Each structure stands twice: as C-alpha cells, then as structure tokens.
Image: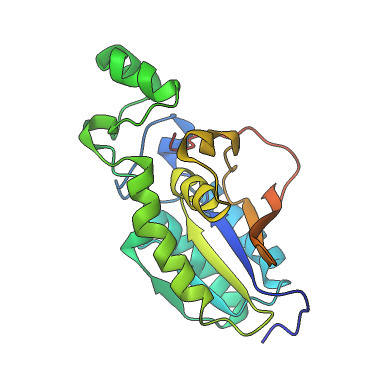
Length: 215
C-alpha cells in the first residue's frame, strides 16, 4: 500500500521512443519496438515513478508499452497486467504512413481529422470507440486500489488523450485541448469530490518536443 493520503490517483505513462516516432509515422496497433533511447527513457522514468510507490501496474500488450512497463516492474516488484484494451487507436490504411503521406493520399479525411471531426482514420476506430474500450480497463483496475493507492497505466499517446478526456468529462471535440505527451512522460488524475481531476500533465522531463503522438 502507498500510505499516501488524498484518495486514489492514476498515472498515465506513455511508452518510450520508437523509430516510427522519430519518422513521424502513424503507428496505431502496429507493434513497433523501442529504440535504445526508448529503453533509456523507460529506465529513467521508472526510477522517478517508483518513488510514487505504485500499487498496481497495467499496460497495453503492444511491445513498446509492455517493455516500458517492465522497467517499472523491475524496480517495484509489481506484476504487470497486459490488456489489449489499452492499445493505440487502430488506424487501418494510415498505419505506417507519415503525416505528410497521409495528407497526400487521403486529403479530405486528413483535413477533417485536423479540424477535430469524428473520423475513422484509415477506416479504423473513432476516438470515442478507443475510450469505450480503454477506460473500463482503467476503472476496473482502479477499483482494486487501496483507499489512497496509485495505479500506473502504460499506454500510447492517442489512447491516453482519449482516456483523460473521457475521465475528465470533456466532450470528444475538446479532447485535443489536452496536449500530447512526450515519450515516457505522464499525466496524473486524482479522485475529487466531483470526479476525476487533472493533477499533472506531460510531467517527467524538461520541456521536449512531442514527437510521434498518434494524433
């Protein structure tokens, strides 16, 4: 148990760097591994997050997230529960393409997406559907926390945005107001009297560019 007063909290931790992040390629559910830099980021962040004395650790089952979570598991002794519900947005024919390539091949779809309209990117999932599958995983895990416990959720940039937006009670068209997470940075929600509230966002580093965010 964490022994921390103030109610439960959830830490949403984005995975470390991949080669497709660097190339600004839309990863989606493609299982791209961490780079050496990504592993170093995960080890560094894990040392910081271990200081929060987390009680539970859940992760997307995609390798880049699972390997990031493993670094925290090594330090805390926690088991990692891997759940496909925490995967990145499935983006169909967009996956593997750079944003420039997507703009060139699917201009109308891309511009609608940039305007914040509901779009099945590449014939894939809507952001609301991503929240539908990911948020229940998080809430189920949170139910297992001790009174003032801490849950760490290891996932992906786009999916984390949808989870934050849904849990904060924002309408889907406002989710983009939550800026992206840099690789291996995190956001924290705490439980208040009127629901979840944002305590930290994109924490864990000096300001760095947000690259390869899945949106």
